[in-house]
Length: 184
Image (cartoon, rainbow, N blue to C red):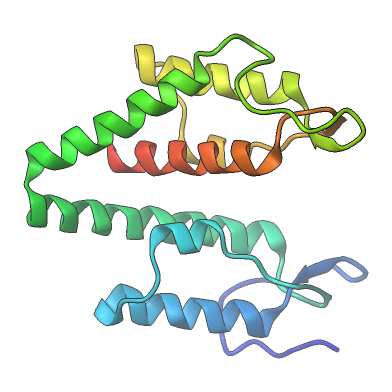
């Protein structure tokens, strides 16, 4: 069943292609609007991890994802500014530096050993593909080589038997996005 949008400016997915459920997207964006206007509740992490059911006639996935990325950026900037007001710039810099150091330590491990692996008979993320992204993140933290939050957000990996544990990789990438947004 196709749901009707309450006015979010997204095109619907092409005929025969599934898109995000319009009602779920509209409800989430309403919660985000209230939160952004001071009602609290949602954080940039919530926006980054938002997911919606896929339905026929739903909203175009790339359009919604792009809007969510912009919303996450705005919420992260607001959260950073609030933390600086509450704890001072020195404490904020120390916290961001600490998280960046922790990530650099993980991302600088030898290739093939950056994350825990799943059992040989289970699928995880492709070790080679994750290591490529981890190397780019490591170079960002160690030498300032450019990488954007969008590039990290859009990283996708093929499945591999005995690959890296997905939850661990996802958590590290989320933390990398959080730090990249914090230091903008």
